[in-house]
Image (cartoon, rainbow, N blue to C red):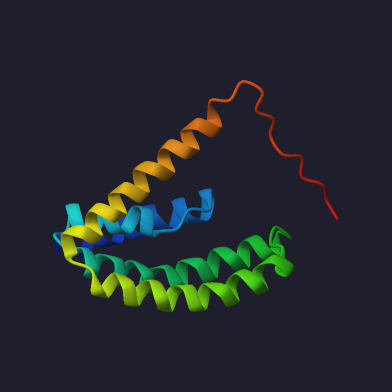
Length: 132
């Protein structure tokens, strides 16, 4: 019972963060599934990818209704992502679990440092969004 409740809480938190911040749910799901629920890295990543589909669909519809989706950008990115997803999954499956976990951790650290450095710039100006 605790596991089901924990998974529901994880789903709510990851869904809210994904939709609100535009982050992939995997940034939340994968570490939580490995550290809290004892998943192996490969299973955590695969489960995360499957769970993200409904989250992403709902969030994309909501953002689209608010006219916050650039569909001209979506088409080439989505097309390339299909091929990239296939190749990335094949590569991940060929890697040792520990190596994959370390690569994921390194990615999170690098992404965090990059984002932190962008928030510390003195002359940082927020981008201006114009309505069409």
